[in-house]
Image (cartoon, rainbow over all chains, first blue to last red; front, side, top):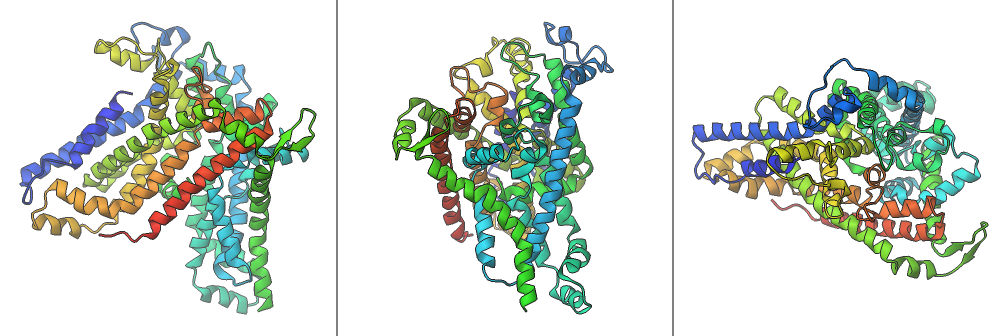
Length: 300
Length: 289
């Protein structure tokens, strides 16, 4: 959208010149604040517009979106025809179910394995610990795309093509998760753990009764970010999925496109459905999600 | 404490096994596989560096590399500069509540999948019924072909990348800005530094680590671009938007030339390895204030 670069250009200026010497006069400072606000608002609107456009398009009929001159708002705000059509044209409900299953499995499995490993790395000394830890962190440097060919070979040989296990396999654990859980568990005072040990708890009991309850924020962070990543994933599912019923939501969206003619009223309805779960997650748990995403910056 | 040593080892074992199986072994196989050619029928023969010669002298491959680089040269600087500006602007909003509301708006695009993002933009870019051409028509500019044009397709995709990533980078900058003590700016103002001087000599140097980090993250993200292209142009028109990962995908899973694909996989791995090592070198240097 044209707004985007424009808003940015002015924004940069807002942070810059006016080269006021001395502590700027109050009126000028106030003007600055208003300018900054104005530009932030413009930027935010540019960021929001495509969502708005997606939503209004999903409420229009095919003839409506082809009207000349273009008409911004739909004739009827309660036209749900496209949403119904999405589910009859393709097994979109199945795609949603597949994605829910895969993203939840990836999130939970990643949580279990990462918190176990995070605990091991944070609170135990054993030979090879640092080698393992830096080895795992080093995995961050291996782009998934460069291991995908042999991985496909393995999945195919194990007969996992076109299965849930095959789709979710590479996402069962994440380096970010291990890093996050280790950081979180490291700050638990050793006294707590030792006290439990003296009370006769087994190592696993300590893990479940002492360690996990004290890192709830990290658990939430990890679950959210993993769910989000896997819900939005395309590359690997594209490779292992053959049958239409095993498709995930991102693939489902693509099945509404073809080279010559795209029914954008249907496509945008499908896109709304696909974006909505993550959007709701974000709006209700905004603080957590932002924190999760900023922390995951590591992963890239 | 033998029990504890064993326990610690057992706790990390599942993760170690997983990463060995899913990343380490396949990475080695990728490297090994790049020296073997797969015959039709499944048998493979050792061909030395022949596949490297073949791929690295192939103009299709270099087209995809140059497309990828041109895409990231457009989107990385734009994203970083806009995100900095947005964070500085947001940081000036006094009310915490409103700042969070506006920050949330910037952040929203991050919740859309790359596929959804690219498809929404493709609709905005639609040459006949798209919103963008409608806007242009209001100021008398004739309709453009955007994603269907040889010259406009890459900038068009770059805008999608900027839109998706802007909020993420803004959040990182905003978090960093908020951890800078306000006294720094006050002291500078009292010493007579203007807004521009404060930005140049205080804010930007203090943000240096985050700026470098964000640049590297964007570089890696944009180098691996796939979803956006696959969902919309499929590399077209006339491979003007063919990217490295798109080519890797097609080579491996459309034409089943696994050897060639492995060469590309090694290329991607080494390129990003260099970028990451560069990042580490830069990060080791202490930031001078």
